[in-house]
Image 1 (cartoon, rainbow, N blue to C red):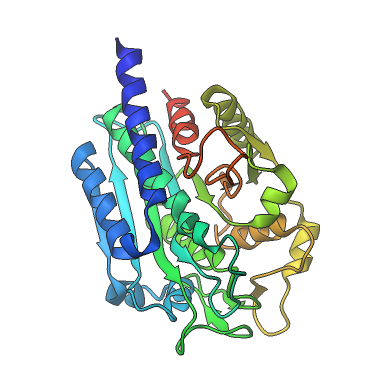
Image 2: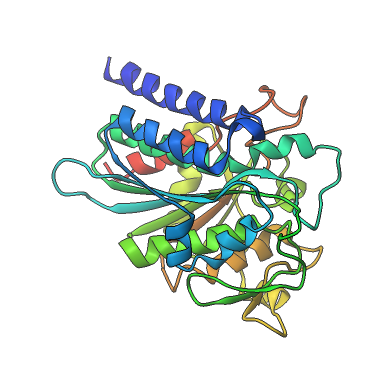
Length: 329
């Protein structure tokens, strides 16, 4: 009976994530995504705080604000906090990319397939619903969910290639391509999670790169980490949950590809090794944290028709994260 109830909880949360990801961009703004997190908090009984643009500006989240510059909709930054009864065995921070629609910005994407870019908040949806599942399952770990959200649109005020921005961490970034926007908003979110909570473990999920789909296809997510024990936990969690991950290299040689002449780091690294250079970019914003993993879910989050048993959003990541969190029982 307990197993059946747990399965119903996880199934509900995964389907809730799928429903969010399947929403068209005109039905899911950053504010509406934040409201979905608030509703999840009401269902699960955990605290949810939503920062508006004024608070985001006060916190100097330059990555999120830069991506939002071309938008007609304000950004949001949502923090979810599930605290178990009694002492928590671990504090785990989950960070999810929440780009509600990604046109590419000034570095505009091709028209073909752009309709699927409503799915670029899949990481955010999975984080929201993983926190809800953890709360409903009463897992003995504290779970912090962090979701930076905006759309990425062209416009007269949009950021442009060549811009140099300053992130919340103080690290400056040369924006070579405005379509490499997810890493900019995740940079601020990773900084916030580390500074505010100093969690034992940080895991971020994002539909970050098409390069990861080229490397691994649609069935599997790319896994990047500076902690081999965490890699093993996530790999085994993937096998147990059916949401498989595969480790990719995170070697220092790849950091050479994102060096900038005018800023601390460049947001793109050229054509080769795109998923790896994106992960190396994110690594710069964990402030030396020793237990971090990045999961690139670009392939399995929203498979093309015929590439999966499911057409549309899969909710990939919810079961993976719940299985990971249950590993600390």
